[in-house]
Length: 487
Image (cartoon, rainbow, N blue to C red; front, side):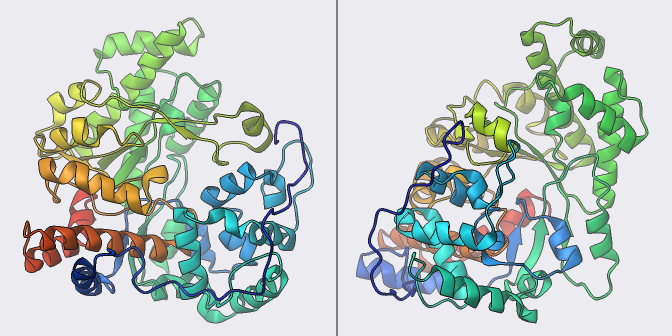
């Protein structure tokens, strides 16, 4: 495929006459009539609450510039790796979906990208992406016909015209989504000029905050690590040629992010294990790794030590530590070489938490300023490890189902697995974790429907009163994300 072949497989389903696009008002609610009636009432009680988005990947420049979205492919297809990875699985090379190709293959024009997406629309049946995109198309963009090979060009023209309207600009959409806060994910060396421009703009009333994402500066196993340290030195004005200098530079940049509104850091290490070496030992290890004299195990230990340093910093500066671990990044080396990272081939791995988090939690699990939100892609750990840990340590919250698990049935499994041990109020509330701006309201709506259905079942079983269920659902969408991410 992207390692060598370039042919695109045609859609293998016939295209009938245009089918209407009309998401069912009771979608994702329970099929049992009694529970569905309860779920409807619960859902309606939170349907119009403001959206809190404490973790995601929307580019802040989108809102700072407020330029119109150019076309539906750039809005709905190319930036969304949930979409591109599945199309790739059905034979569409990534450069035919708008992703730049380092081998020099021409990037497909937007209309061709859109045609490929529409031709494969039927392949999204049953996926969470289908739920989101239907909601985006219908509720945000006003589309009333399903995508297909037959409707692709007419839909493209309809959407290009729609996106040119003033109400479809990023800031207008932000307001129409009822977004209260949107957190981005940012490199520690970023000057945050877009965040600062928004904060200084008297015509802007929204709240867009940065999130400190230091992965590349903590990963001593990467061949790019020395260059990353040089970049951090330039941004911070602190020499990163020593362990102590690197730590000071990270602390300085954390302070800069806090001054510009950040409330959290985000860490995507391969696993959650941290080390807490004496400073002299850490300095010697740093020097050996920097000189290329350490074994691979030494570089991994230094990476864990630097992650532990960020936990220590969190206990001092109060930035919430979000841990997104357990992914094998860039699983397909030829695709990584050709298209780079974050192109849809990161794959979940099994992850151990009980022993891995113990050094951090022994130090900071009861610390009054420390707070961690722990996410996993390994749902076998929900009830066995994460719920018991969050059910004891006041500093630890369970992150909502994330990435491959932010799908309706996985959300239900999460609630079933953790609630009886940790309750609802040791969880973080929903995060959308999206690069697709228009998917934000769709994803939050999905979570509200799923949680309403779960709570309706507990009400029908007389585990909760409907009044308690309504309060829990409000907390999941309001007070819990505010508390977990210190919004």
